Amino acid sequence: MSYAAITGWGKAVPERILTNADLEQMVETNDEWIVSRTGIRERRIVSGNESTTSLGTAAAREALAKANLTPGDLDLIVVATATPDDFLVSQACLIQAELGASGGAFDVGAACAGFVTALSVASQFVNGGIYQRVLVIGVDTLTRYIDYQDRGTCILFGDGAGAVVLEATESPRGLLSTVLGADGNGHKHLYVPGRTKYVANSAKLVPESADIFTEESPYMKMNGREVFRFAVQVMGDAAAEAIHKANLTLDDVDMLIPHQANLRIIDAAARRLELPMDKVWVNIDRFGNTSAASVPIALAEAAESGSLTEGDNVVLVAFGAGLAWAAGVIRWGTEGIVAKPVPAEEIALDATAVAAE
Image (cartoon, rainbow, N blue to C red; front, side, top):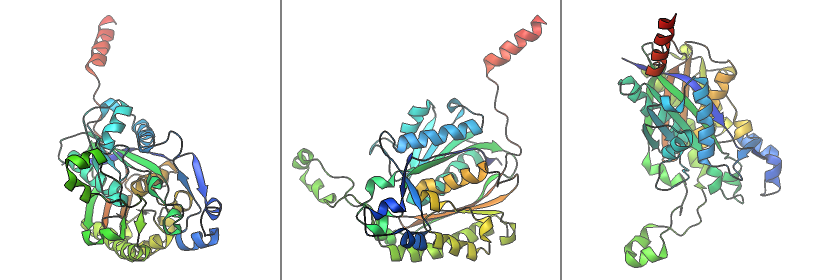
C-alpha cells in the first residue's frame, strides 16, 4: 500500500489588512466586542488584481518549491473552494493554466470543510497507486459575498489560500484516517442567496428557468447561534473519531490544527481532546475565517515554524456550510518518499559524460 506524504506546503494571503478598528468605522461594533466573541483582531481582504486564482496559484508555487518539484511533475490538482473565479470552469483548471501544469484537475465543494475533504479525496489517488504526486489547494475569497453592514458576518471572514503537495511513500505518512459528514438539513443556517441570476433574454426562451433563481442580494446569510452550537459539538466529536480510526489515543496527538472560525469553538475542541492550547495551532487573530484556506494556512505556518517534526501525529478538523464537517489524522514527515524520476535526456547526458572520460 502507498501512503500520501506531505512534502511541500505554502500559503498566500492578500496584501490588504482590515482591522477591527477599520470595522468600527463601517458598522456598529468595536474591537473588544469582536475579540471577546471571536478572537479575531484583523483579516486579509482581496483587492485590485487579487483573486481566488492568484491566491491559489501563489500558495501552490510555494508548496511546489518546498517539495522541490515543478508544475510538470504533478499528476493531479484538487482545489477546495466555494468562491471560484468562473462559474463554469473549475478553479483547479484556472490554477493549472497559471502554473503551466497538466494532468487531471477538479474542484471539491464543502465550504470551510473543503480542504480536509479534498485532502481525503486526493490521498485516495495516491494510496491506490493511481498517481504519484498530487497538489491540494484550499482557497476562498468569501469577502466578495459579505455585507459590510452586517456585523454578524463582516467581522468574521477573510481571504486566503493554502496548499500542500502529496507524494507517494511506502512508509505510514500523510493521512492515516478520515471522517467526513454532512447534515443537509442545516443548509439554511449558512448560505449565499442569489449568487446566480438568469439572463432576461434566456428567460424569454425558457421562462420556467426564471423561477429557479432568486433575486435576493448575493450576500452571505448566517444563523450564528445555530452554526456555533453545531460547530462546538461536531468539531470535537469528529476529531475524536478520526483519532480512533487511526488506531491512536488522545495521548498520541502532537498537534491539533482546527478550522479557524471562532476561538471559543477552537477552545471547545481542544477540551474535548484533552489537549493544552500549546498543542493547538491558532492564527484566527491575524486572518479570521478564511474558509477552505483556513486549515492549510495554519498547517503551512506550523510547518514553516518548525513546530512539526518527523512522525508527529497531527489532527485536522473543520466544519462549514452544508452543514458539512471533515476530520483526519496525518502523520507528518517524508520517510520513504519515492525518488523523483530522472528525465531520459539527463540520463543520456550522464552516459555521454562517462563515455567521454
